[in-house]
Amino acid sequence: MDGLSCREYRPEEAAEACAFTERIFGPLPLEDWVGEPNLTASMAFLDEELVGVIPLSLRSFKLAPDLVCTSAWENAVGTREDLRGRGIGTAMIRAAREFLADRTDLLCVYRGAERSDGYRFYADKTGHVDLCYIPFYRLNEPGNRRPDGYSIHPHQEVFARAEEMAALHHSHWGQYGGHVVRDAETYRYLIDCAIYGRVPATRTLHRIEVGGVTAGFAVTGIRQGKRADGTCMIMDFAVADGAPSLAARLLDGVESYAHGEGCPLVWPSSMRTPLVPLMLERGFERGPRRMEIMAIPVRPVNLFAKLAAARGGCEVTVDVWTPTVDYRLHDAGETAPRCTLELKDRELCLFLASRLDGRTALEEERLTITGPAPLDKVEQTIARLGRCMPWVHHYLDWL
Ligand SMILES: CC(C)(COP(=O)(O)OP(=O)(O)OC[C@H]1O[C@@H](n2cnc3c(N)ncnc32)[C@H](O)[C@@H]1OP(=O)(O)O)[C@@H](O)C(=O)NCCC(=O)NCCS
Image (tube, rainbow, N blue to C red; front, side, top):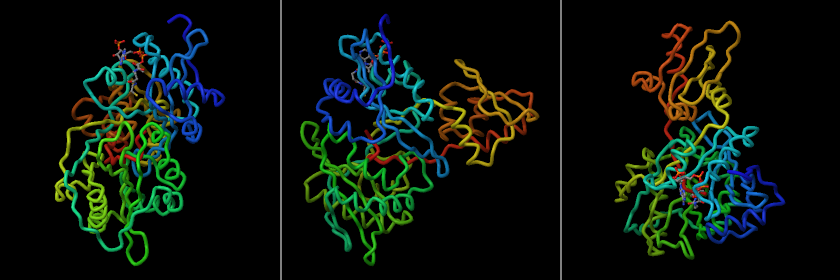
């Protein structure tokens, strides 16, 4: 498109970028934009005039227990209404992939509505790949058993308890990927993330104590204002070591809170969360897959290096061939055997995000390998590196 240029946002453009996003998506207080740590954006200008913005939140994201990548999350992707369908959105994403390459492994987005034009924009137009699906579990009539040692607190209490929460989260979910790495800092910003400027919600911290020590916590949100939906959402949940009895007690507490508020409980989670038996026992019903986390690898070489480091190294030089690109994914040195992975861009993204099982993909020919390295040996290496790790999503990460 003549006169179109896209580049990274500059902090002095905060008011302009925020107002632009607000015009498309509704109220977004500037203080929330400015207060969001690690925020950048891709900006599109047509002859100097701002015509598109993609805010990007930079986060450490866990792909697998020992595998953390840097990620950028697109949120509120918007092109000026009269200029849509002319390549501006695609150009902003292309620019983001370029300017993020000095700091980001994976470009991610939350999406839903797989039959919509919006979904097709990400999946078909710009090459994002579905990494996991997020169903909403729903309990229409929460129980009213308030357990001993249970208490609730306004969300500001999270600031004081962030460290304790991060430790509990790790204790419960350490073996899972699929969520933002929890530490004290992340809790402080996740709980007050800019999304609550647009979708205000009463957030509540729930605690369960054993012998005076916090043994589990949950965070719930009840939307307020225009997007209020009368449900109480479970946004985060963790108990020491994932102990089922503690999880059941904490859920009793959360149910009693929702009961008191007169709200059904809704738990956006994962297809294979280990909490499914507990949810089903309580009468939660799983809705259809409702959202997905989608991504594009920005630094595949870096992602592969992290993956190899976490899984015993890679003694083979690996080239990659897809219908769109060829490049060297891993250099094991001059004398190392060499092979080429042949696969679609989608499978490559899944492989790099620890969501593709190498052995199964080889069997199913979704991944094929050519030499000159001896194939039996290379296949063993790829089967060792390519793992589909269990992912658990927590709605507090959503933006
Ligand atoms: C989604 C959006 C950012 C795409 O930007 P864009 O500048 O129109 O993107 P492009 O021109 O590069 O690509 C357009 C493609 O996106 C898809 N699309 C999604 N919504 C669309 C819309 N409202 N108008 C036109 N195309 C749309 C179409 O499939 C189109 O594909 P086509 O060119 O093959 O017909 C833009 O439509 C928009 O601002 N929509 C409103 C806000 C929104 O819904 N954002 C996404 C959710 S966060």
